[in-house]
View 1: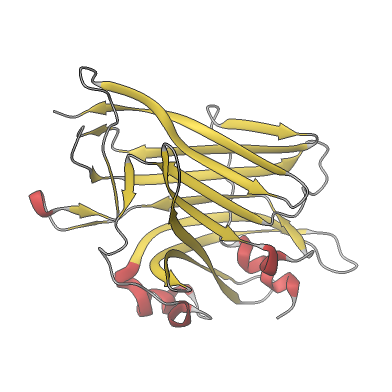
View 2: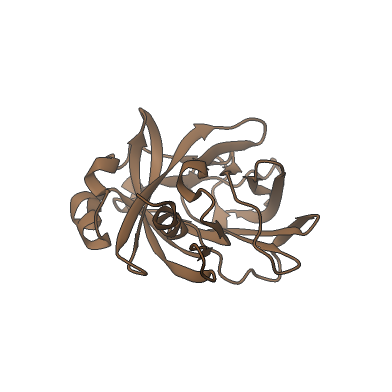
Length: 257
């Protein structure tokens, strides 16, 4: 498949809507990245994890208006107080959803859906001006190369219908950051364009009442004697080959009695 087609596909995984005023912004030279994220609910038990939904998003740009450097890989680490239960839902396989339309992917792996998202990017074509591309993605619980993964399935219709699945491998991090979602983009984007960001919403619950379980579960890491905690919620690392940038955002939770 031609590289410009592949870029359109990965663009459908990676998005950047407007960043909130409270987003964390890091800059190196003319490269600027805004990283943002939230979780809900913010009232959580202290010791027993409860289901939560997580949203993370990033915006990549150059301060002089030129295309930013090509993004090689991205990783997003979530605080250790939050845990992913990948065994809660059936595991989808890439071969079940690639290539296919969004409707067919949902028909094949609807029981494995764990989230959704959107993207924006610019695609570079030979001897033509770049054009913007945007759309949405569907995230599935799955496996990739024998490891747990979130499979981000994208489907674009312009300039021609194309589909692609980008696997975010799930692994355990270090220190106070626990689960890490990491994806390599080098083989997908090539030199045909550049990504301008991402937005990903994750979270699904199963069951009711005391049997209610979540794909993502979290507790409030407030010390004993305190009812509120401010903690590093998520860290995103962006590898551009010659440059690497990272950004950490802090959030607040309250102990639910």
